[in-house]
Image 1: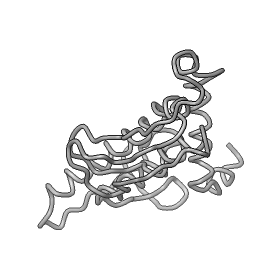
Image 2: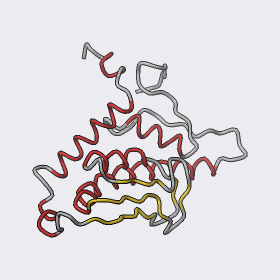
Image 3: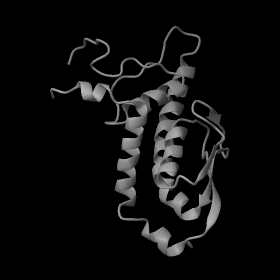
Length: 176
């Protein structure tokens, strides 16, 4: 691969928008037929994303961006933002507007929020386990393709530290 600098120049917003576009294309395809056939066109409502268990939130901007990509008129209220703890049954986010839009965006938004919150929550568990020692919880570059910046943010939201972004920004010599 000769043009590696093209990858280095990507920013978080570009990466997030690309991931959202790909995820919605994969999930929605030609349209959410179930929602179109079962929900009246003019139906409006309020949806709540609720923590099923105690967690550290990560990915709320990504989830919000998914809802906005589907329908810019949706109103999103983040009650628990990135790096904040949420108790079981606590509302993390509210989305108000067209029910069809909310339902169409729901799964993709929850995938971002669930995956990244899972990373942040697990990281926080390890960070707490080493409190009072000199140990630090540090990530690697072994991330999901395309999700690296988001997953590294989630590690920081959980209290961990980032080691290196990629092969281009730090040296690591090991036995492969």
